[in-house]
Amino acid sequence: MDKMERLDAAAVALVRAGDRDAFRLIVERYSEMLFRLAYRITGNETDAEDVVQETFLRAYRKLDSFDGRSNVGTWLFRIATNYCLDLLDRRKAQPQVLASHPDKDESPLEERVCSEQPNPERLAYSTEMQTNIHAALQSLSNTERTAFVLRHVEGCSIEEIAVALNVRSGAARQSLFRAVEKMRKFLAPAVRPAG
Amino acid sequence: MKHLSQDDLVLHYYGEGGAGAAKHIAECSECQANYEQFSSMLSAITLPEPPPRGEDYGAEVWSKIGPKLKERTTATPWWALPHRWAAVATVAVLIAIAFLAGRYTKRLPARSPVEATNNGQLPQKVLAVALGDYLDRSEMLLVEVAHADRPEDLNLNTQRRYVSELVATNRLYRQTAQRVGDTETEALLDQLERVLLQVEHTPQSATESDVRQLRQQIESGGLLFKVRVAQVQIKSKSKSGSRAGTAQDTSAFQDQKRIL
Image (cartoon, rainbow over all chains, first blue to last red; front, top):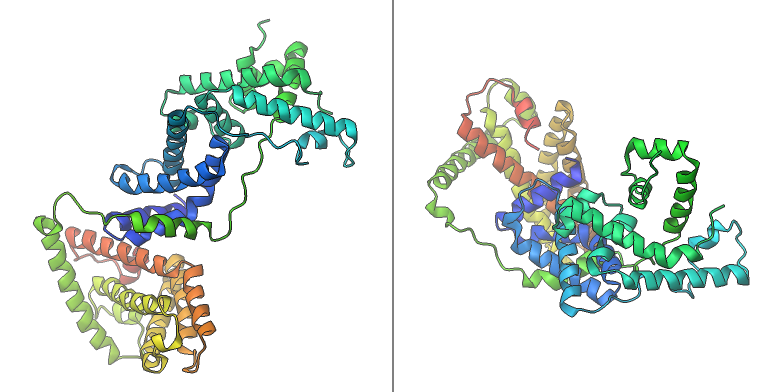
């Protein structure tokens, strides 16, 4: 357990002992991380803000159920992921655009074309790719998208995804496989070989 | 030769394929080509960075949810638990000892708590309790400063002598921590001492900006929180120590080393 984890554990102990203000340390430490996660899953800034606040409120209420086997960050991550899925399922709506906006020149695709100077062909390619990524992400179910974001962006292991989604690791793995397969169908025809 | 499936390639791309997949890809040109195409596709997928949050984002979130948090209550009232009464009694006794020890050490200002304890003149637990007592007093001062908006709120002239005493006490404990190699306690007391010195040297004619600077120094390093954590740990150790019995022969240095 590193120093920050010890501080987290001490903060939890203080909150459990009745010192509500100690919860502030946890809120200040993890707010941004949760916002980034929530934004990537929901694709919506307002929803992400909502997820951050609700996650902390739920965590505070459920603090007695936190057994300390995982660290506080992992625990909050799990609560936030669950709430994101609840939010999306409740609305039964597709999240907003997750893929980079075609107008924004932030694409690593261009970096892979080995030139710093964009030309019309590369820009057209980038725009096409981003449009395809957008469409591919829209085709995923909420669970598939969440599994994909957790693996592809957040770097979570299959086991961690399973815990976050509250499913068995086999189910988490299948969600990831389905997500990648759908992405491949949309993107493979448009992808240029690297190099 | 059985080729790798797409699922195998997915796992390999994300570093969960195992050594077998890596070996196969290295040896099989068909799977190697598939994997290259596959990894080109996956590495092309980027999601936009979330809109940046300000440095105070955590504080903003806290300001929104803080008022919504209800005071936590335990299922059984604390006073209904017999062991709590034992703990309260123990703490009361220790505080009484600490009070007496504090009076005693004041008559020997040249001697550090380390020296006094080394000579066996203070009970082993006194140092722990005395440090806890000192942190209690420091916390009260920090809270007062942290909530001050104007110089008048602090009444610096009246506080100065009290703060000077805290600085001197802090220095003794910090030196003790340094000698016993308790780096965490030393770091905490070092941080605390710097704030106390700043309070001590803030003139009565201080401006609101000076007071704000003091507040920021306390808040930016999470000093108040760290002090509270240390208090909890000391109390926890005291409780466990009282349950296990206090007649241990280990030195007070070693005991204090375990406090934080």
